Length: 274
Image (cartoon, rainbow, N blue to C red):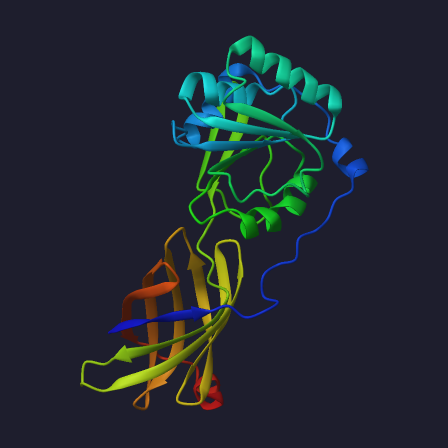
């Protein structure tokens, strides 16, 4: 079975950005990242000449300076401390990359992140969690995020590596799929089914319902990647209890893929409720 259609984003489903005050941002101490760890972070993000790296809480600027001097990328360092900003600019001049990097003094929760092609972090666990909705909203799908030492709660990293005793985490921003999705299934008997999928998304996880012939079925095992989506629904089909597994690719607001069926012996009560 194949399906195809377009997403319509429903207002209010995207997570609200949690604002932070400058005083809160100042609570993150400046602890320099060892140079081998800096380079490992940039390697993990696969930084190249076409990248624009945003380092949030940039301190003395070593991450964006290394991105420019070693990998040929451009960089933006964001820090609320004017002393760190001045230090970063001086270090960039000394490294001869002041034309490739700039430093922005300000609250990292207020800076527009949409131009970034990669983001690096060395903050604190609670700051990472508060920053997560902003990263998911403003960064383009596929953008790598690398954090030094701290994770992002239940947003599972794709890779975790240890360098010089430091733990590094890698994520890529997933496709945006929250909202209502209407598509049609081409059945093997030549008929078609109209499906309506309504989902909420939290990082790589999705949940919601699929409505088929007026009956809403909850989805399970919902996952979203950079350009893929998958979920399972247990439903009734021609009087039979079945499990239907959907797998598709998300490209430019459209999705196409396959729906695989298997017979499923549902509990009597669950089948009756549907």
